[in-house]
Length: 286
Image (cartoon, rainbow, N blue to C red):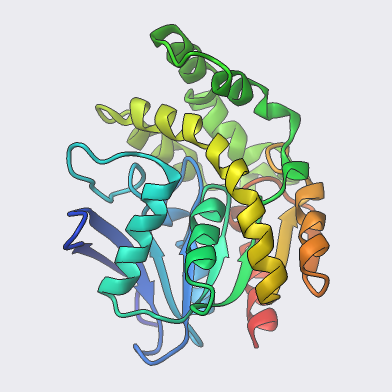
């Protein structure tokens, strides 16, 4: 079996150097775009990609601020900017049609793409990728307090202490996972190490603060769902305390034919239930 290729491309307009993983039969195969979440990178898809690549050209980029993608000085870290970067990335690869897997931060990025390019998106798979206020768990309290703050130095330090520690990074992976041994320790260790790079704390805090603008965008996402009736599979770790099962069920309000499958997993279900999720994706897209 051929390996998953790691590649880089410098985008002509934004000058972002995007690191991405790619595997598939050839460039004529249908494209499946995988969009990761916080605090991870395309590394979270390292085991999923080979399971999907026999039928699809699977592409998983690192978002700016994560993994090994490098953004120029002055880059504005907002979800609008992340979506614009991925749009430019797709254009650079001449990809005009694709299905998309969205998880966590990947959801507001991917759904912005779908809203802006409704004819490009052929199907959506959301694994704990939220688009409804019903999906927020109680652990969002510190972030919501940060939204209401003055974004002072003290506010930012408090937020970093609450959400950017090694303990909370590991917690996101293992909490709600029936067998924590299924979570490879390099996952949360790599995420935490990359967040320790100079300047990355401020990047993450800027994105935490901007996340409130995703809620404002939800109405547009819902209108896109109602208008397009895009095929959607919500496969959801039911033990996730960040994005709770009500967020999965909410998709059916605007997409009555959406499939909702709750599985016995936590937030990073793709780490603990890789084969199950791959099987469901292949079945859904067939």
